[in-house]
Every structure is written in C-alpha cells, then in structure tokens.
Image (tube, rainbow, N blue to C red; front, side, top):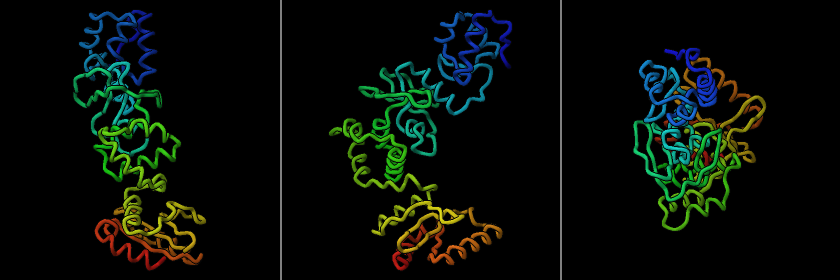
Length: 297
C-alpha cells in the first residue's frame, strides 16, 4: 500500500518525501522524528503499511522493492552514523569482486547486535571514507579485513582491480597490515604474488587459466586483446600464439560453433597459432593444457 502523502501534515510530508527520494525510499526512526513525525504517528504508519520495517528503527516507505544499494543504506542506518560497509561487502561496493556476499558486513565503532542480513564487526578504529554516496572502509582496510575469509585467488584479483582502478595506495596498505594483525600475512603473500593482468580478465575461467600459467612457469599472456574485429582471450604477441577459452555454454549451438570456426580461420590467415581449451581442460587436466601451451610457444 502506498502512503497517502497528501493526508499527512504538509511540512512533515514534504520533508519525509524529499528525504525518502534521496535515500532509495529508506528512512530511519531518528530521521522521521527529526522531520517532525511523532512516535505515535510512526506507529500508525507502520500499522497502515505506509512504513515497512526492514531492521530495528529502519523502514522502507511503502514498498519492499529495495535495490541492493538501498539495502546497504538500510544497514548503515541501522548501525549508526559512524558505521561503514566493510569486509566482503566493502570489496563488492568498491567493485573489486563481482558477487555480493549473502549478508551485509559492517564495521561499527560500538558493538551493535547482528540482525537478519547484517553482520557487524568492531575494530579498534573504523577507517572509512565515502564511495558512491555510502560510507565504506578504505580500500586498504577493506582488503586487510577481508583477507582472512577471501580465497587467495580472489584476494589477488581484488588487488589487481584496485591497482587498475588507481584505488591502491602502497603506504595505506603498509599502515594497515602491521605485525600480527589478522590476515596481514595472507595479504602480504598476495601482494608478493601480485598479478596485474587479473584486472583485465573477464571470467573465472580466464582467471584459472592465468593461475595455471603461473603455476606451470609459463610466461603470462596479455588478456583480452583486440585483433582486427575480434577480442582474443589470451595472446603471446611475439610468439603469435592465441588461446581461446570456452565456457560451458558459450559455444554450444551450431551457429556459435560456425562463428568460432570462421573466427579461427581468420586468425590463422593472419599468421597466429590458435589453441582452444574448455573449462574441463583447464580445471581437470591442467598439466595437459600447460604442455600444449609450452609446445606452441
């Protein structure tokens, strides 16, 4: 049920409407009170379905179709002004990983109870900034906090993305790592094995192929290079070797296979050697893939 804003006292209606429009339709109890809405009126609006409770003291105005960004804002409003998105939620908000975690992670200066969909952390100091209009821990702190629970390959991918987006500050990293801090050893190892090329890979299969090359001491190729009308997955330019990586569903139809064959023929006419590997090849038989690549280099 949409709220009948026209029936509300006009000054309060205007303030609430403007605030809700600026906040993805999300409002906190504190904000409603500051807008001139009494506790009794808040209770009546909740009873009528005009305000829908998301978290203790946090409401959606009239509907539950909340965007992912709106859910982050609702979590921040629940935790208070000095809270910040952090850990894997911070990585996702900085666009350093592709998938959002199933719960929203927050760093808070004073412990707040975990509620459904929100997991709070209480560091000694919340090192935060603003990104895309929301408070989030700094990139260095986010990498540090998330390192204990992030797989090595994903942590290295996040480092590469941060560098590619010019978000990485070496001095900030040194300050947050320190000796004995949880995750500092893992983050330090990831930095030592930094692979900038991961910022230009476009799929988990491409990531796995690059790690395969590293593991088998194969010189790393250039990822996703345009050659004429085509973008090839991996290129060794001097050796004129191309590797194409086929996901499970990307090349399954007859039309797709015909296009792949025409593409391969075009590249061969330009003097390139073309190798093609599937997900199964890279994941299940990496040694055979490595031998094929080495033989072609």
